[in-house]
Amino acid sequence: MTTSKATRPVHLHWRFMGIVAVGGVLGAVTRYGLGMVIPAPGAWPLPTLIINLSGALALGALLEGLSRRGPDVGNRRVLRLALGTGFLGAYTTYSTLAVDAVHLLNAGAVPAAAGYLTASLLGGAAATTAGIWLGAWHHRLTERARS
Image 1: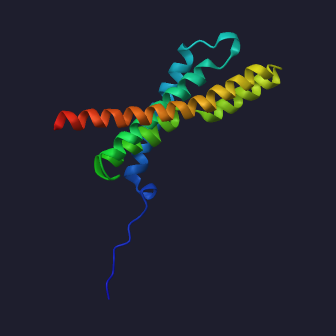
Image 2: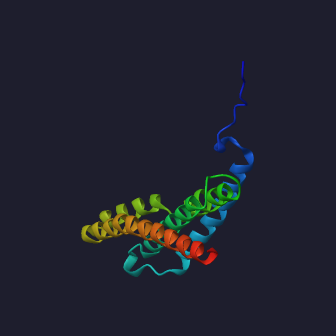
Image 3: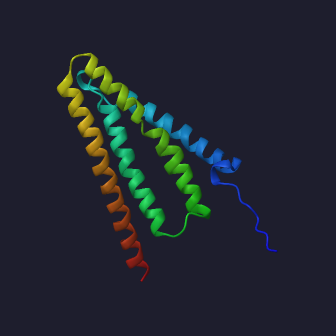
């Protein structure tokens, strides 16, 4: 009879939870700081849009770059959890996107709300795609440099 040691899922390891938590604190503080310095013209939620689009770009590049370097183990897993799940998970704020859209709608600014939602959702998809492309491009460059 063979037995195999059962392993706990990553999300149940205290070490990994701590890595995500530290990344999350830093991401939330960064989002808050940027939200304070980026102007919101006419109460239009430009800070949230810029933060979410830059986070989508960074997440696409990070995950593509890590996946091209090998399996999700060791330092790659730590980077994914710290930067992807933790930092960028707290940095981006799609809940604030929803609240900002509701505020625009409640103020009667229906075209502004529609524009904001369109820019956020389509822009987020485009930024993620661009990040994936950048991650792949960077990987190709580093592979060529090693050859």
